[in-house]
Image (cartoon, rainbow, N blue to C red; front, side, top):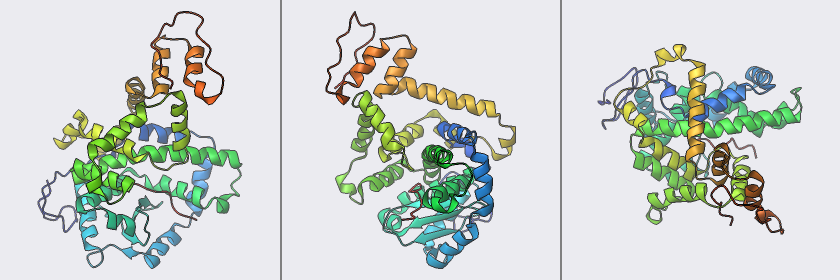
Length: 373
């Protein structure tokens, strides 16, 4: 636990008692969907070509100079309270080399961890002004989690492919291939946010602060007007509400986004915080970094597959319920789809020709991607 003294070169660790996690592996907090999405991304045709080309040509040195020259670098002399949080987060997650951190003038609440060779963390003034100390601590832990997981490399690739696409248009893969890679990167990006949210909770060790921070990102600095339980109820309503039309609209709405919806992030984090896995980590039982080399890829795939299977079975989303019922041999596909999508057309759904065998469904500028704030 943190005792206010120096740990592995990390000075100025605050005196508040928090558990430290010596040698912790990023596998401890990484969401199964994060790992499986990254594996799927690497299998995309042309990804290796784009990755190798951009890794050698992206002006990372220029990016670092840009922040050095036009932002404020966090230190003991500048934004000292953020420097304390940063060193604290690195101490708790046992990240030996503290990444440089910058505050950038931007009213939009945002934070990101980018860099190919070494990660750098950037937070905006909008975020610093929005969050209180413990909420900000969770965000800093979130970004340190990205650094420990090695996410900054792929996030930098996505940043340049989306914000600076014109400059890399010469890559000989064609627009469709590039769009497939960008879509794959965005899918992984969204899943990686769930992992980093968990890292932020391990650092802050204050679920209420993490929830408050997410609520503020969604609704601004009006905590007296907001309620955590009501906010989480929105996530449940979002998942369970509507019919198949809404399920499709959810997919279309999330595709262009870099982040999962905020209520969904809050619900996912609360579920993990109440799980046995989280309690085991807090009790000191977690995968170590020195064991990573012995980790089986097959085991990771199996864990991801089990997660998706469990998610589909427990989901209240109409489309996921349909998939589960059909997998179990319930219902008639044609009739249920017609009823689910009946509202898209003026035509009324055709009445069933025979008795139903399953339960009835109710019808009824070059700004970087937002990162982890």
